[in-house]
Structure formats: C-alpha cells, structure tokens
Length: 115
Length: 113
Image (cartoon, rainbow over all chains, first blue to last red; front, side, top):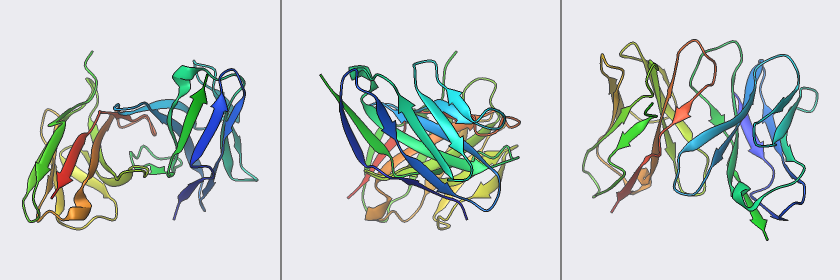
C-alpha cells in the first residue's frame, strides 16, 4: 500500500525567505508524485507534478520539487516566498503507469508567510 | 470555461439522515473522483466514476454510493449519516488518459448534528 508523510504540519517563515516543505512516500511500485495547494475557502489546485523524466520539476510561480527515488522523497522548495504563498500544501502520490484518479494525500503542511 | 462545480456549498443534516451531493466536471473531462476531507486532514479517496461505472473505491463503507450520468456529472450519496461524516466533500474531474491531472471543485461542507 502507498502512503505519504508530510513531516511538518506548520511552517512559519518570513517574507522573502527560502522555504522547504518535506514529503516522503512509501510504495512498492513506481509512482507519480504531486503537490497541490489549497488557499483558504478554495478547492485544491495542482502546483506541480512528477510523472517521468527530469527529477526536478517547476511550477509557474517559482516553486520546485525534486524526486529522489533513493530517499523516497519529493520535497517542495521556493527560494523566496511571498505573503500570497500562505496556504495549505498537500503532497500526493498515485500508482505509476496508471490513469487513476486515486491519489493518496499527506496530512498537509500549513505555510504561514509573515511580513 | 467553467471549472468543476459542486452543490450545495454548505449543508447541515442530523444523524441518520441521507444526503446527496452533486458535481459537474470541467468541460472535456469524463472521469469524476470523490474525496472526503476531514478538518485538518488531507483528502481521502472515496471512489471514482468513469463511463457511468464505479472504477475504483477507497476504504469507505457501503453507506457511501455514487452515480455518474451520461453528461459525466456525478452524485455522491451518503445514507444513515454519522457524526463522523462531517467533512468537506471534494469532487475532482480528469480526462481519463492523463495520469493524476485532477481538477478540484471548492467542495461541499457537510455538518452532521
């Protein structure tokens, strides 16, 4: 069975500082990996995904994540955060080579960006 | 282009009652998945519908059932409501060939008293 562990429930950080949100997964099969963001009172939005190819994936708003197979991790990073990045971030995994909509989500990490 | 729409946005029920939640997928999408998100938790997969059939199911009891219509819209039904069913119910749509490309609605918040 697959599972996802987000190692930090809350991450407070000052504006313009770098941030890393940690995600580890367990799976006996190949996986696809995702980060979703949930702003207050909104649905989840896909931030970035790893399906295959380059292990470093980037989003349009400056976030990046690196798939590390040996450490079974998919940590999310941003070199300089903005107040508008304050949100709940969810790491998720699905079975690789599948079109399934079945995602296994972590518990979420609340990113609190302070001025 | 309308995204995923869900109704109602909020509702309150009492224990033992039944509830129906509705979802219209994003235009061009043919697959609908339902998730339950309890307060402070990540979403949990309930089931997925494709071609009007339940294709996958998570670890939820039979009290949770669903349906997909020919226009790809979907309903989630929960019978014999329990206090623990209080949660945000999220609908996500996708185009079946694309792995993991889920588009989520804003959810229906169910409170069971």
